[in-house]
Length: 111
Image (cartoon, rainbow, N blue to C red; front, top):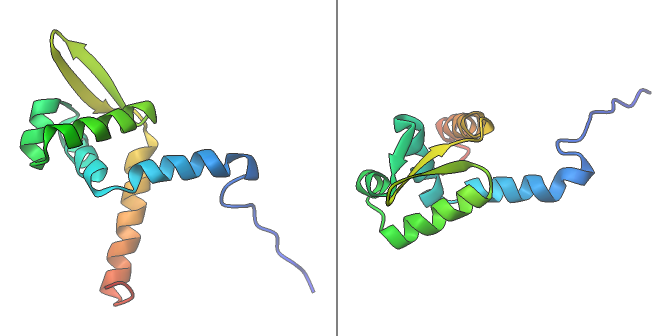
């Protein structure tokens, strides 16, 4: 009998940082913010508020987390701050997970 060995999903040395990165994406407010940033490329905080309907304190907190996590970048112009996605893997991760969730819902696997 042959045993087929597959590489791990995540190398042991990267488990903690990968989990931290995925945790950053695991929030509805952060996903909504990333959605509007993906569509519009770069937005001011006020534009993000207008497009998402969330409150400033909430959005600012989440933008700070995303920026510290290296997912978005902040650019200052006078008193305004503009944000854009700087992690090129975010789109692929979100699209893969969304597609799997959509397929599972269609198959009646998820509620």
